[in-house]
Image (cartoon, rainbow, N blue to C red):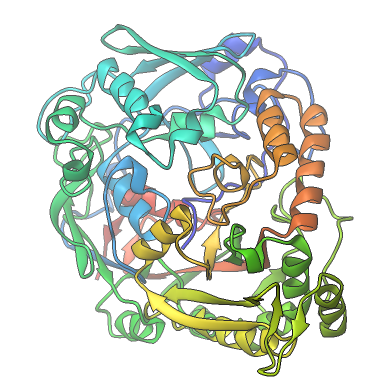
Amino acid sequence: MKQHPEPEKGRTSRLAMSRRRFLQNVGVGVSATAFGGLLAACAAPAAPPSAGEAPAEAPAEAPAAAEGGAKQGGTMVWMGHQEVAGLGPDDTGPTVQWVMIINIHNPLVAVNEFNELENVLAKEVDVSEDGLTYTFKLHEGVKFHDGTELTAEDVKYTFDYYRNPENGASIAGDFTGVGSVDAPDKYTVVVNMDEVNAASLTSWAGTVIVQSKYHAEVGEDTYRTAPIGTGPYKLKEWRPAEFTELEAFDDHFRGRPNIDVLRQDVVPEPSVRMIALQTGEADSAVWPLLVEDSIALEQDPNFIVYRTLANSIKHFPLNNTLPQLSEKEVRQALLHALDRQRIIDDLWNGAAQVAHSNLTPASPYHKADLKRYEFDPEKAKALLDGAGWTVGDDGVRAKDGTKLAFTCTTITGDQARRPIAELAQQLLSEIGVDMQLEEAPVASILQGMREGTMDCSLFNWTYGSAVEPDPFSTLHSDGGNNFAQYSNPRMDELIEEGLKKVKFEDRKPIYDEIQEIFVEDVPVLYLQFDEWMNVFNKRIKGLPENPKNGSAIYQQAYKWWIEE
């Protein structure tokens, strides 16, 4: 489980044009870090996010279809590891849901598989000099699946609904700084900011757009089960725990998809996903296989395997409001007790890097000289002793009548990560900590961790990416995905301040301190950044070369075709 596509590094800015002219005239894909790259037309260091860059124009039709060699027809089968609990804009967090949602809907702009920000529903994007006004010109004639035309009112409705805190959307925090949304004419959307939000173009501007009249009529709960978007595929059948099947939308504004049917099957067991790929029953694993199986398929001429470094951290989110987990000394001790390199070597075939921050080493904002937690059980014991947690007759530590015990709930059928939890259980028991293991569906885990009714889990999620370091959703006390129930006033202050800064040199000190607080407080037990491996059967043609963002590949499915 992780947040939707994980952007990485940007390029240096182009400075010759004015901001406004550049935004209007850019014609090729350029990398950008959120809006931090868009406001400042001043140079940044070569590695960090760039300035003055804007989305590229979305193609008018599927490029693959124009090549002549592309074929129409057939069914493409993907596999995910967990149920698809919903298909609306607020369900985009888990990858297996996002890949379906992004094929049913379109956003104004999107980060593609090369970590380039490109226009989709917007044909032009204009940002004012002060960063407080965004103007989007929409493509005309874009149709929803019900035949109605996309207008600015649909965009306004979508933004207003999901940013309204009364509607309880987990993505509401993405709209930080947005004051009002206007639709001055049928194809123009103007977003007025109350304050600068440097993450705008990779946060709220990337929200997929709903058919407003339909959504208002049926409501959010029904919409999530029967969405109507502008995407290349429309919903055909949805069985949350079994499969989601989409069919080609003939009137998609970028051209009809080449492949007729797109289906994702729910296959929790990675070994079964491997068999399905080998037998030709499936064409891709949206959620990776066991690492050793992906490595084996790299040597098989019948498959293409993409490796990209994940921005998501494999981690144990801990409920910081529980008495036994509320002290940072306890959480620090738990991290010292985990042999993270052993986890990578023995349980992940070495295909990962130990995490020492909430930000991937691929990020220009990554701070290298942070406090580290080497595997040191004796230090872990000393920390717990010093905090007053003493070992009882049963071998479990306690303090003021509270046992140092909690339950980690892993995803049902997660063969890949369950062994990590089992090893952690053993390692923690050696320092007097009782971690029990249970299983539950991912939807229940997400809800439980968000609401603070679960103790702990184990999954992948993004706490700031290489393109945009903002961790509002996960580390701000009001974040919609604050799984740890973490609250630190200084962290909140820094996160809010970081969104108001545009230049890299102004933002860097803020995110340095955010990382320092993160590693000091240890709100979650952060383990590793994985090498993400996405496998495709070679019968799928039109795939990209050398993508940098594995999950983002799937939003380009409308370009692909099948050759037997």
